[in-house]
Length: 165
Image (cartoon, rainbow, N blue to C red; front, side, top):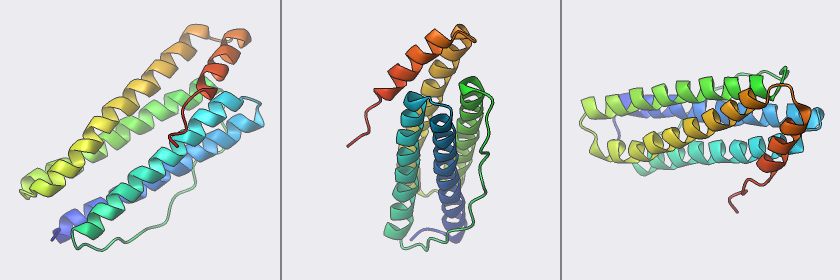
């Protein structure tokens, strides 16, 4: 059985994962509105991935005999200046999620909850990938600057992201 403090911390993380999904969906909608379908596609795939992260946490809490309590999800921003701004925000957001996962992992260690530690190791590894991917795209956007042809090339590249189906 999961402790009350870990249950509460997992519930908080579930909310953060759902907010992440909401943020990516908002960014996707913005990219659609400015005719960047590749960016929109990439962000929509990310939206689905974040929902799957929340669901993975929900299933874990339930499997451990805990109770999932979903809180309100804040509204994400809806307006962005550019794909560069979006990916700056994505990297900052993923770094915040990484810090939150690390805090949750620390609590699992402090409580000697080995099952939670094992479950969270997947998320620790996933966050390395999330930050790496966001950094790569951000650096590409910085390199191309305001060159529209290069931006459209990146847009076409991002459209190729596998949907995971």
